[in-house]
Image (cartoon, rainbow, N blue to C red; front, side):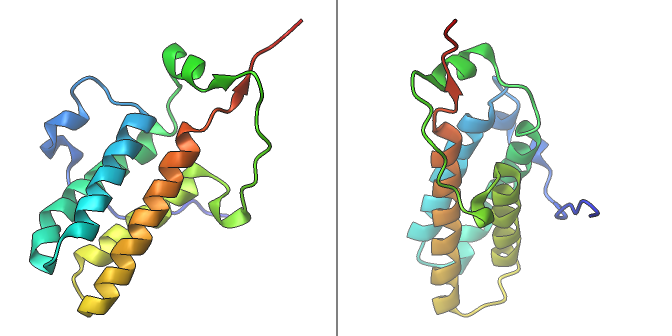
Length: 147
């Protein structure tokens, strides 16, 4: 199957905080969650346009960071004595796909071609997807090796 990339027409370099301190995937996911909450809370479509552009850049950077190696500190943070059995369903099976869904919804919202009641539904869905993805990314996934 051919890999598809969602077109991203906003330059992540415009947001200096994306390059300062080299935020990792959890930092970026948490920022995306905050931006999505701002979008949900906004009352006017015009108000959310710059936040959507920013979110799109963060999601782009997040998708890149998902391919990078984790820092030793993150590995320690995500290590637990008991690894919980995953209850993921196929639609939420991997973070890359979740990130693509979020990016697609963000780009759809940026087109501003919907009714106000549709905006509320789409921004709510976007926030819920980002929150779920963030929760999943922060979930412990490594067990302690015992000999």
